[in-house]
Image (cartoon, rainbow, N blue to C red; front, side, top):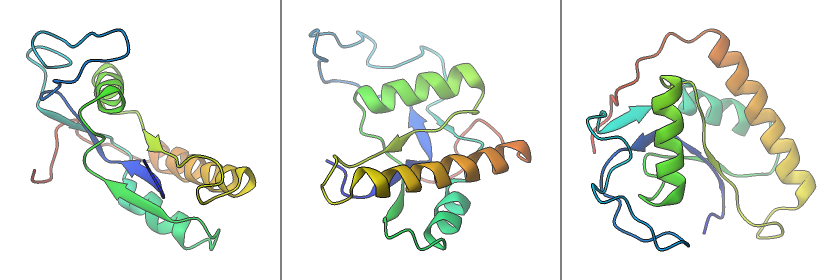
Amino acid sequence: MATTVTLEKCGHNVGYKGLDNCRFCPGSQCCVEGGPECIDSIIDMDTVCKRVSALGLDVAVTISKDAGRYLCDFTYYTSLYQSRGRSAFVHVPPLGKPYSAEQLGRALQAIIEEMLDLLEHSEGKINCQHEH
């Protein structure tokens, strides 16, 4: 479970083995057959993290390259695939563990504003550029 606000950099296509609440798992263990192994968001999450952290909101914001090969990663990959990388996924800790609703609300507002600013100026690629 997240203890920081975590910005996911990319979604993964393969490696889905766990059953969801309806006891379903794709037979191919992937989101999109023939799709790229990994798709990055065209939003520069490192920049978003640095900018939001510099605001001094008393909420830890971190970066992740793995949303977990379960529902979160599946949803994120599918969204990235459909939008050609114009998507974002943020893991948020439960209320009170350790942040209040007000703290999380301010942090999420700042994150969204920074993402929108970067999205207006991005020309990103959809395939991953980092090592796994």
